[in-house]
Length: 265
Image (tube, rainbow, N blue to C red):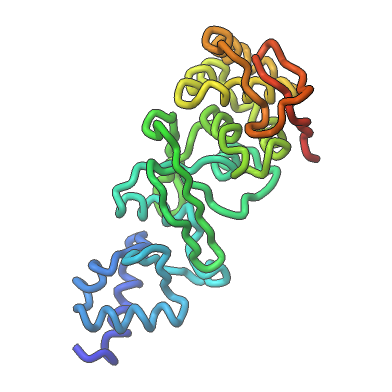
């Protein structure tokens, strides 16, 4: 097949995929449908025209007209398919997950995803995806949310709260975390909060409980406090690696309060 004839066939290929509600494909898929040489030539032209883009090597997404301005599908519309293609267990977390649970104080600048191993970030047009490593990822409770293009795996409200504290440096700092927790609090189940604490280091639970009390959601932290009291044999720092000199100690959470936390307006 001559390259000049490949492009119209490629456009029809995209149209057929979209008609079936499928907005992603692999290089191997395209080669099987269009022929090796024709596929390479056609995909290059389609990409130059902004009709497709590639957020990962060998993986393509169709960019419908409503998303041409950002040059890619929104991350939640291709991450499920990409993770399936790469055979990687994952979940969307931190500020991204908080948004899905109704805490939308500040729109995250990047889509945040947890994996078991390190992975390079994705920049697809104006869409950015950050990957972080989570120990015991498969033990973290998750929920499945339907998007326009598939089912997205997202950490539960309780797991999101715990991760926000553990990865506060990826969530804008403790002030931002406290602000999000204040919005997320009504979604939290005390029993589930205590249960999820076991998926992370104990100081995460100590910090989370303290912050919940600071934002007026202490009633959600009762079971978590029982969990901490039964296990904490030494005090942790509210802000890791910050000086402890003259920091007051919170006996309830066995925590050195070495940082001032303010909820943002």
